[in-house]
Length: 552
Image (cartoon, rainbow, N blue to C red; front, top):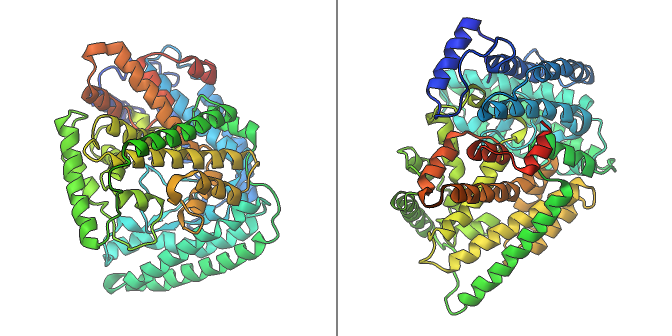
């Protein structure tokens, strides 16, 4: 993660090197005053990131009440240090960085005052994962010490087994601590966390089956971690039957979180109105597409593994050619392999929502898989600023990552990518409807107007063609994430709405000089920051909503 604070000389060298690799216009004149200028912000950021992590004792992060109370008290000193730095005269990207640091501090403040995941969310204590997230950081709040099993090659080498071992050995003690930390009464957080915990047990069982040769010595620790997880699942399941309270944060807290952590310049009520509009728009335009295409045969899902694989490879070929031939963006060598690694495995059914789409046209979800381009940018491209070398905490990036990937689906349709297959336009509007329906589910859950089960039923009822089903595995898992992490369910379309506006503003500003390639290349260089901050940077202007939100 973040290294400890370097010497002043070393930090200055690193900062100047980062500035030299940054796109034009992203930095101020050099040598701001020590401690109060941008270099002071970078120093504070490094200190803050070290502080934000919980203390670790015997390899186990400490989320006990006394430790959390101490962290909450000490947080104020970091907020005061940030407030003492005035960014108002800095160039916009550096002002954005100041706001990103403030948003992260506000995220920890909100955790202590409202969410308290260590006390309210048993799934917070999941730390073992075999599935890679498509985001810069895993969605939702989790305890320190994740073991990302997907990132290793199997059978494990002795060195890799040694890297994994501390995280595996910490599981029993962490779950034992969790039993005393978890005192909350938020019923849905308890009930629906069980699925995540059972998945951890499955992942540990899978890991045990892969331990051979030099890594076999790790099996005893894996078995202990799995037994502790099974025991914890049973405990959580029993405790959940005694829980009776609501799980949402309430409208006032939700509004505060949108403004101060997610940096979304809208309120709960405004988001409800916008999501209702998006749901109505998607379903109405779907009806018109169905009318237009009524004489065409329906799209059938892939029926075999061979068809599934063949269509995927052809889809990647066509998609990458479309991006290059139409000068949508600069195509890098690492993009094609990043997509081909996401082929997936054929299943005869029953299909979950995204498979209903993907099996009918394998190019569609490749557009949303811009996520894998984003992850490659983080590896291969220089960070726009020193602070953006690190992934933002509290999923603050999500209106950029999820919002753009969602918008990209419709943008590519409008650019002509699916013109040869008119029925695919219908799939795009079904995707929009699903995002709007589950967004409304989140908003109603967080306002405590719906339980998670009611929100899941609402989403299923409002997604056309019965593609999203209550008897599937997807809908409750998604709604649970949106209950854990306020603003995540809505970020797909709220980010899209803001980025639609950004694209429109840049086109209006540049007129005939506008090119999509230049726009996207600039967009991609800015890093994984909120849509509102991207709009500010790329237009050079604060919208009235942003002025109101930032209050500076």
